[in-house]
Picture 1 (cartoon, protein in one colour):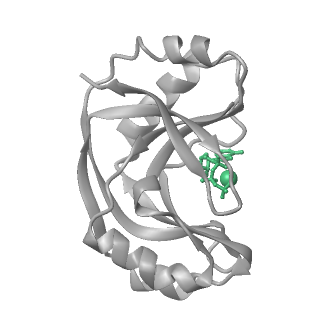
Picture 2 (picture 1 turned 90 degrees about the vertical axis):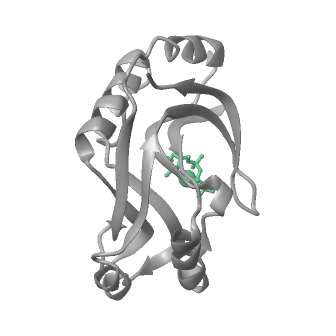
Length: 169
Ligand code: ATP
Ligand code: MG
């Protein structure tokens, strides 16, 4: 099973507007699929073991703010357009906790708190949209849980199936 651990986030009016405006440039993320990845696990065989090992995480709830945009690998030659998430510390602490409980699966990228809204096939210059949204606040949200997802890749876009949701304290 292809799996990842993420914080599910709601699509509000301003996020939907940003997604819709940038849609013509590539493959946009569906509102119901908006998430902040804590760790991409990839293909795993022992889902049950992973599911159980995440149960002991006793991290506290925290608030985040989604503000401004960025692109991977960079603004001028972007493949992924994302909204930035702050503050980094509680997100990083939770991501580290998830990582330490799933040690057998190595991290292939250092954690970077972001919410992907668009993916493009060929690289694109996102400088304009990024500078236009420098001060845009997209969402303020209390994070009360995180989820272990299965990801089924389809030509029409990924389907994320919830395996288990873990409440924060
Ligand atoms: P698609 O691959 O069809 O564009 P997707 O990227 O949303 O869809 P997955 O590839 O299953 O679906 O990825 C699930 C989540 O994990 C996404 O947030 C994705 O950005 C992230 N992710 C995928 N591959 C990696 C990776 N190698 N390292 C870190 N994060 C990854
Ligand atoms: Mg992917």
